[in-house]
Amino acid sequence: QVQLVESGGGLVQAGGSLRLSCAASGRTFSFSAMGWFRQAPGKEREFVAAISRFGGRTPYADSVKGRFTIYRDNAKNTVYLQMNSLKPEDTAGYYCAAKDSPAAAINLKDYTYWGQGTQVTVSS
Image 1 (tube, rainbow, N blue to C red):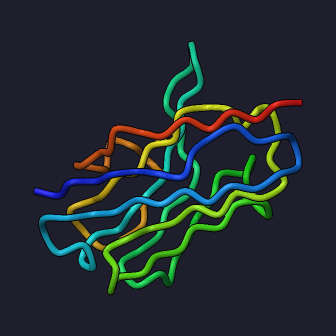
Image 2 (image 1 turned 90 degrees about the horizontal axis):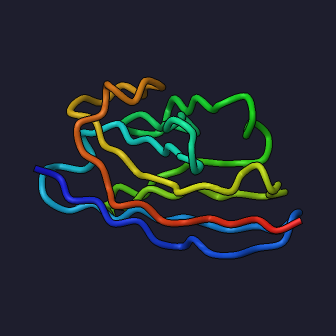
């Protein structure tokens, strides 16, 4: 089992920045690839970014490429999502997820464990 707790969400103006954190406990965090997904009201949950076990592979959704950065600190069992140049369309609940294997993935069905989410609201 892996427990995930997100933090760092909030209200920010367009063009601003936020850093989300996801603290993991339970099984060996360093073995797992991690991902960030988001879900806006009335929409399906969508992929944002992922990171492999040691951070060597970090795929991003096209909509966030160049603005968001995912990274991890295995010593702290934490994965981060640095979000810059935020846009109103980035408004959503953001969810951290963990896989049972080390390879990064963009499909939410590949992830076994999920956090409760943290809300990000970007005002125009």
